[in-house]
Length: 444
Ligand code: HEM
Figure 1 (cartoon, rainbow, N blue to C red):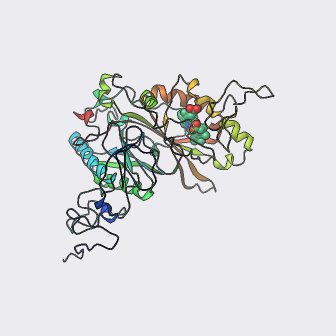
Figure 2 (spheres, rainbow, N blue to C red):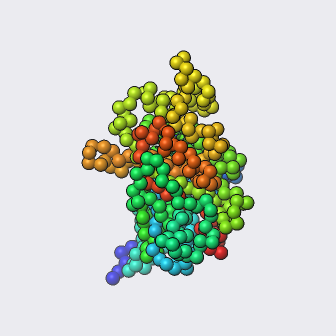
Figure 3 (cartoon, rainbow, N blue to C red):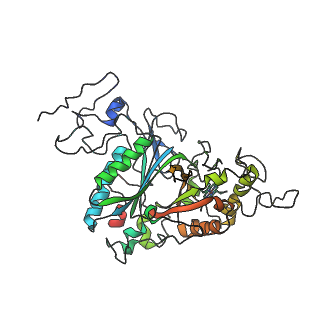
């Protein structure tokens, strides 16, 4: 059979890459990036930011225009990276029993992730090249799309180490103590089909098609070794993670992320997000990594929408308009929990969300929240299946998440309008150096 794919002829606004995509279309080729050299820029902490036209001078963390984040570095990108607008999150079950196959998969994922985050296809040949009688090594829906700030962040769940009493891949000796099974929290109504997972990948990008393309190709590469257990699409970040970003709003209509940890504060990240070197010997491989808590939280939007503005602000503890604490001041003012109104009641109610989660009431613990809004259609009763896909990075979930969630489940005024329907915890290995693969320290 003749090959109808002819040597590519560049259209006026296209550049065709010379070698690997000789006969086909590549992503960056179409973007005319061939003439643009790329130099890394410091972008806050951890992730390095790359733009199409660049200089070595430090710049604002959130530039206008197309963005690429370096894949290699001390920490995985997608944590201390200014939160992108879109999410596709996937949890995987490992379906092979072979440790070698698992390692091979992680190597292949590392290569594909390094390529896709730079705006290239998942494989070297590209979506329209390679043997005509074999599936292409990229699925093609990202042809012509830029990197769109794509980050891919990988994690290992507790069941990668031990499942049904089996030390599946001889990893149990290296399981960090903090990689626990999360306890049942009051108010949980968890769907097992939306919970847990041996591996996870958080794909964040400013274009949803780029994020979906990345997860799809990682799943395709993993065929026969992993299968998707559950996945979640998210739109509209619910947290700012950089001082250069405006605070977004969650589906309750409130600003979210005001008091979040920000990438511009490396000391706070070191104290609350990155796993320190000295924590435990069995977790030495996790130094520079983190823990990711993922919770699918449904909002009973219809009930919420019938509450008065007074009640809405009371349970949050902040104003809806500006996001300022009810004790006064502007958005970034520190809440004063001691202040009382003329009725002698605390201006920030005892069960207000911001009171319960404030670091002063949690032994100083803070977290890097990086969640997204979601709407997964409706439930047939005229109600939206919608909520907040809560993602938080912490250095130890036993001190920085579990006690806080326990308290929220029992006393949070917001919890009347929430239902936790999915839950997972992952250990997130440190960043990858060139020549290494994801989580290499765990296996070597
Ligand atoms: C759908 C559920 C949730 C909603 C709608 C929500 C909403 C909010 C809002 C509006 C704020 C104030 C703005 C800000 O500082 O970011 C806030 C702050 C915060 N929330 Fe939530 N939240 C939810 C779930 C959670 C959960 C599950 C946790 C942790 C267990 C949590 C932890 C925090 C923390 C740590 C802060 C910052 C407090 C501070 O440092 O002053 N939130 N949340």
